[in-house]
Length: 159
Image (cartoon, rainbow, N blue to C red; front, top):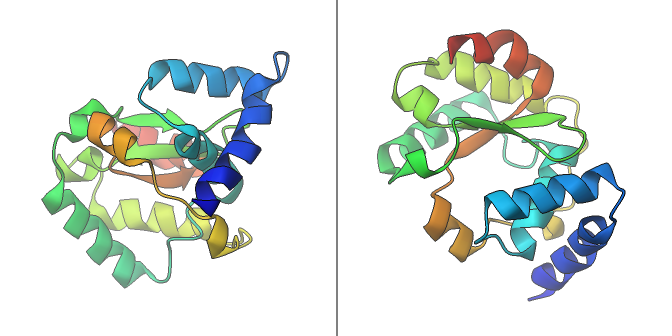
């Protein structure tokens, strides 16, 4: 409950700011994903600031985790193949269907994720949130966060 209240407090001022580029991006995101909740808006802001750093420990565990999730995915086509994060678009959410379908090899994908996490300050884990259950049920998000420059240079041409 505490995390949800924090999410609301952080996301809604941005959402309400009529002239803010972040406010516009959040409103567009909420329109694209009408089943999203404040926690999902918060997650988008959080990902634009911290990228994948809070999930990464080492490349071997990243490979194992991605392959496990790929094997267990259900209806990942309900989520876009890729989408940029919020107003600064520092990062890109890349759907794991790109790995599942062989468009991006697992080694290249994990390398991009690992390099995306390098040098980013680690957030306090109290502020890390998952997507809301409603969002998960509606959109089946299965993705990893990759730094925009790495994505555009190395992965986008493969998609």
